[in-house]
Every structure is written in structure tokens, then in C-alpha cells.
Length: 162
Image (cartoon, rainbow, N blue to C red):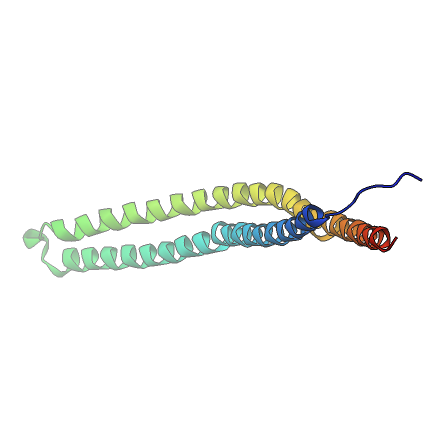
């Protein structure tokens, strides 16, 4: 058997520490990304549509109130004294425009929710693979490296005792 001159395994120890640290940091980063992806999916899938549904209800109430005020203004006067009700008509037009805007935002929010859900699903798959590598492949590599270090230590101890 050929004798090897193994005197320093510190660089392999450094590699082991670096591999463990890398695995831990990669795991942490992948968990942060996953949390951000889930939050984005929640925002686009639930929060934004719920917000615009609430705005739609508010716009419908505002439109009904504006129409009621216009009707009250027009019906309160005699036919020959009928007021122009310019301000009330303007409120009705503005409320109708707001209602239309809310309906458009709801339609867009549904489309965005579907697209973001697809994009998030496409991202979560590979992200899960990264997490699995952290939990299995990198951990196994660190264990194998630790075993090699222990064998080299035993060898160097044996060589120094001879």
C-alpha cells in the first residue's frame, strides 16, 4: 500500500462547513420565496377581487342614491317650474362611470387571478425541487463529506502514531 502524506484536512472541513451553510441559506431563501409567492397568489386571487366587489357594492349604492336624489328633485317641482337638476344629473353620470369602472376592475381581477395562479404554480414546482435538494441531496453530500473527513482524521492519526 502506498503511503499518503495527509497532514491537513482543514480545507475539507471548510468545504463541509460551507456546504452546510449553503444548504441552510438556500433552504431559508426558498422558504421566503415560497411565502412571497403564496402571498401574491392570495392577493391576486382573493384580496383584489374582494376589494373590487366591495367597491362595486358601494358604487351601486351611490348610483341608487344619486338617482333617488335626481328623481326627488324632478318630482318635487311643478311641471312648469321644473328645475334643471344639473348637479344631480352630474352625480348620476359620475356614479354610472364609477360602477362601470368597478365592473371592469372585477373582470380584470379575475383574469389576473387566473394568470397569477398559473404563474405561481409554475414557480412552486421548481421551488419545491430546490427545497428537496436542500433536505436530501445537499444533506447527504454533507454527511458523505463528514464521513470522509472522519476517515481522513483516522488515517492521519494512524499515520502520526507509526
